[in-house]
Length: 139
Image (tube, rainbow, N blue to C red; front, side, top):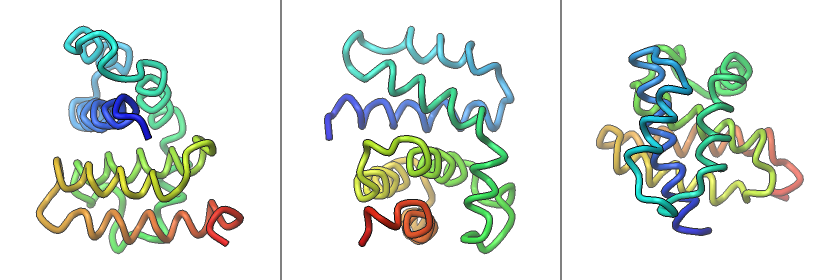
């Protein structure tokens, strides 16, 4: 997996977090994040797919995550919520990305941005969701 793709996820989690907390316009957030980055330091098209995809499919993503959460999605820490939604989006729509990569990247993002044990929660939820969405790949 490319470093640029990882950097795209890194930025997307921050942007989705900002969108969740501030309710800011996605286009404005996108423009702000892109302006703050060095050219070619990340995959712009992947970042945009993630940033636009999560809000566009929000209710479906929250529905997919719901059965695997021990509380309502709104009660999940906002950082972990952003990471879970991003991971769920990738598992559902980025079928070219292996599920193990998505889960590993989500765990790493949780370790960087989340609460101390947040990565364990993210891992548990996304692993169960992967078994639902990626059955053929997991077998």
